[in-house]
Image 1 (tube, rainbow, N blue to C red):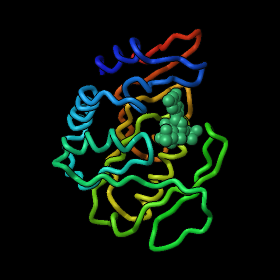
Image 2 (cartoon, helix red, strand yellow; image 1 turned 90 degrees about the horizontal axis):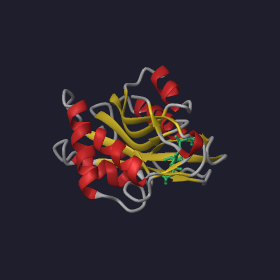
Image 3 (cartoon, rainbow, N blue to C red; image 1 turned 90 degrees about the vertical axis):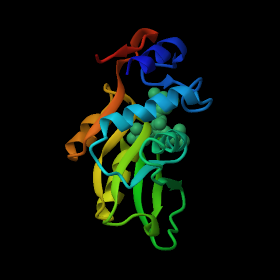
Image 4 (cartoon, protein in one colour; image 1 turned 180 degrees about the horizontal axis):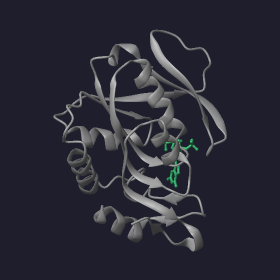
Length: 191
Ligand code: G4P
């Protein structure tokens, strides 16, 4: 997505070889016009599916998923919750996730009343790095026996393992931009 690449070149901040900061327009301050274009692009990519729910994970995925949902007939957005608690209560799907980036463990939780085998799901998130959170969401969708059409990712860092891991789980991953390197303070795209 050329518009997004341009914006990353203009306003993205390379923190180090691993981290690209996009808080100017995506995950702190949000540029709604840009995110609308992101939503339209996800719709174009996944237009052949009758999606009934969009699922993301708190926090940064929520705003993007909500805007995108407007291009999918206003389907509901469910954001999975992260919790450090080991006391899981109620009728919920939950998985234990170990974040490689943050070197911590947490639970990803989603209420069973919002997801079942009649659902067709699109996952949406801002970044795909090591993919721990995303693989947790996939486990939950599979446990619910819902149909998973794929994952729409805004920025995939292809020098990290997430893309490979998730595609190896037989999940379609569509990333709007792929960053292959952040070395030397320069953002290099895959194509
Ligand atoms: P993990 O397996 O190492 O946990 O990787 P994952 O892909 O799940 O990413 C971990 C967290 O780090 C995610 O946010 C993700 O959005 C964020 N992240 C990864 N790489 C970058 C990057 O280059 N730039 C920025 N800005 N964020 C990155 P999170 O912990 O789920 O939190 P939230 O921001 O959504 O609340």
